[in-house]
Amino acid sequence: MIATKRITLYEKAVLVTEEYLGPAGERFLRRQINTHLNIEPEQLSKKNLPKLINWSSIAFALLTNNPKVIEAFTNDLRSLILNGK
Image (tube, rainbow, N blue to C red; front, side, top):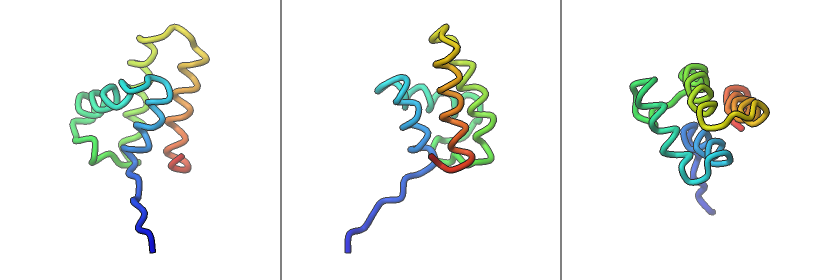
Protein backbone atom coordinates (compact mmCIF):
# COMPACT_ATOMS: atom_id res chain seq x y z
CA MET A 1 0.00 0.00 0.00
CA ILE A 2 1.34 3.42 -0.97
CA ALA A 3 1.10 6.14 1.65
CA THR A 4 -0.16 9.44 0.33
CA LYS A 5 0.70 12.75 1.93
CA ARG A 6 -2.27 14.94 2.71
CA ILE A 7 -1.70 18.44 1.36
CA THR A 8 -2.31 21.23 3.86
CA LEU A 9 -4.46 24.30 3.26
CA TYR A 10 -1.29 26.40 3.28
CA GLU A 11 0.26 24.20 0.58
CA LYS A 12 -2.91 24.53 -1.51
CA ALA A 13 -2.79 28.31 -1.14
CA VAL A 14 0.87 28.30 -2.17
CA LEU A 15 0.02 26.34 -5.31
CA VAL A 16 -2.61 28.93 -6.24
CA THR A 17 -0.25 31.83 -5.54
CA GLU A 18 2.59 30.23 -7.51
CA GLU A 19 0.31 30.05 -10.56
CA TYR A 20 0.44 33.85 -10.62
CA LEU A 21 3.81 34.71 -9.06
CA GLY A 22 5.93 31.68 -9.90
CA PRO A 23 8.51 30.67 -7.31
CA ALA A 24 7.98 33.97 -5.45
CA GLY A 25 4.45 32.84 -4.60
CA GLU A 26 5.36 31.06 -1.39
CA ARG A 27 7.38 33.98 -0.06
CA PHE A 28 4.55 36.38 -0.95
CA LEU A 29 1.97 34.23 0.83
CA ARG A 30 4.18 33.62 3.87
CA ARG A 31 4.62 37.37 4.31
CA GLN A 32 0.88 37.99 4.04
CA ILE A 33 0.15 35.34 6.66
CA ASN A 34 2.86 36.47 9.08
CA THR A 35 2.11 40.17 8.72
CA HIS A 36 -1.68 40.24 8.61
CA LEU A 37 -2.76 37.08 10.42
CA ASN A 38 0.08 36.93 12.96
CA ILE A 39 0.29 33.15 12.70
CA GLU A 40 2.73 30.67 11.25
CA PRO A 41 1.76 29.62 7.71
CA GLU A 42 1.32 26.02 8.79
CA GLN A 43 -1.44 27.18 11.17
CA LEU A 44 -3.57 28.52 8.32
CA SER A 45 -7.20 27.41 8.58
CA LYS A 46 -10.37 28.09 6.61
CA LYS A 47 -11.48 30.62 9.22
CA ASN A 48 -8.37 32.69 8.39
CA LEU A 49 -8.91 32.60 4.63
CA PRO A 50 -11.26 35.60 4.17
CA LYS A 51 -8.80 37.96 5.86
CA LEU A 52 -5.84 36.40 4.02
CA ILE A 53 -7.63 36.67 0.68
CA ASN A 54 -8.46 40.32 1.31
CA TRP A 55 -4.88 41.29 2.16
CA SER A 56 -3.34 39.10 -0.53
CA SER A 57 -5.60 40.61 -3.18
CA ILE A 58 -4.66 44.13 -2.12
CA ALA A 59 -0.95 43.30 -2.18
CA PHE A 60 -1.28 41.47 -5.51
CA ALA A 61 -3.04 44.50 -7.01
CA LEU A 62 0.09 46.52 -6.25
CA LEU A 63 2.05 44.15 -8.49
CA THR A 64 -0.21 44.37 -11.54
CA ASN A 65 -2.71 46.82 -12.93
CA ASN A 66 -4.64 44.14 -14.82
CA PRO A 67 -8.07 43.88 -13.15
CA LYS A 68 -8.86 40.55 -14.83
CA VAL A 69 -5.72 38.94 -13.41
CA ILE A 70 -6.43 40.39 -9.97
CA GLU A 71 -9.98 39.04 -10.10
CA ALA A 72 -8.81 35.60 -11.25
CA PHE A 73 -6.21 35.46 -8.47
CA THR A 74 -8.80 36.45 -5.87
CA ASN A 75 -11.36 33.95 -7.17
CA ASP A 76 -8.81 31.14 -7.19
CA LEU A 77 -7.99 31.84 -3.56
CA ARG A 78 -11.71 32.02 -2.72
CA SER A 79 -12.18 28.57 -4.20
CA LEU A 80 -10.11 27.24 -1.30
CA ILE A 81 -12.93 28.25 1.05
CA LEU A 82 -15.52 26.32 -0.91
CA ASN A 83 -13.75 23.22 -2.07
CA GLY A 84 -10.14 23.31 -1.02
CA LYS A 85 -9.30 23.53 -4.73
